Length: 456
Image 1 (cartoon, rainbow, N blue to C red):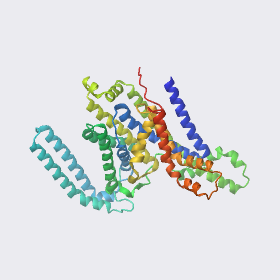
Image 2 (image 1 turned 180 degrees about the vertical axis):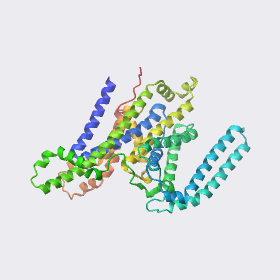
Image 3 (image 1 turned 120 degrees about the vertical axis):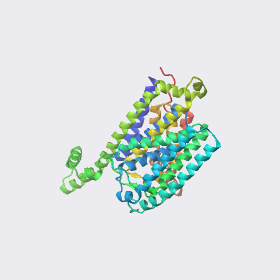
Image 4 (image 1 turned 60 degrees about the horizontal axis):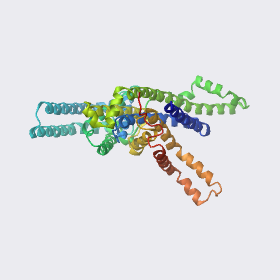
């Protein structure tokens, strides 16, 4: 019972903090924080599946997040017919060449015994394949990127609703995780961390430089939304009437018709932003609840107990007949798929895809801090960590500015020390994050909501 009391108290405090932001700043800001807290919660659940369940260190969260974002582009953007006509056939041929190489190498590995001759054949096959890919893809990519590069310059996508990209993003990330897992999961923990980080950097580099696929650093903007647009709401009669009814008391105090209309227009503009963010929050909350139910079922299932047994003592689990390598690969794929879903959700919320923004600080190490602060091995703790750390990450600057103004209220506004502190406000984010992490590690080393060990 105490475990659930801690969960209720912790989440109540978190909800109260978000409400206070809405009261003292604005509800639009509060809902924006809530939305990114929910997206961060999905990411932390993915990282917690890998680290909390199986003890796998994956520093490649950034790469899987970017793949989820790429899925949003490839699913929702309409196909660029001119680009397909210019070089689409070349890209399709390259795809079949890659598939042919994979199946050929797999066939050779299965049918022929291990020998130097087999290795030479595989190396020759790879070299020939790469040469063919270069010869076929080069002209095609040049023609595709030359098609109206200011607006397109890439193949586009399928033109489907962007919500489908959440599933596709999970499959993209799972596919990469399968390849990475086959190669890197045999490494020791520290080497695995380095390998996954470097592979994620390779993924980001490919997405940034292959303009024909994702427009690269030119970014993709104006992605379709699963919720209404603010401009459309501002011109919709039912929404205007709803805002007017909610603010009837305030509008009655205004005598001038013109002034009343101006106030109503501003209220409609503000309410449209809140309504859109609220719609996003509902969608994201549904995903978090579904994933929480699934992960909780998995955690307390025989499979979940087996994974924790493997995490605590691989040798003993292996001696009991458990296939440790197979289970590690499975959980690595599952956790990465959840992170891919979060990446697609984030691009859906932003309405744009910016490959240059995927950096380790935001999309890998901050996610790990969330898991550590919340409590690894506990789904409720991982979600709470996503909320708490992201809230502090966003509100650190306003809190720091408030404290600076409070403690330097006796100084003149032109005081050099006061001005220096105010100019340094953006850096207080890192200071407060560091202090918060140190306090958690000192007083709650297993996280705010630690893993529940005794399972009945």
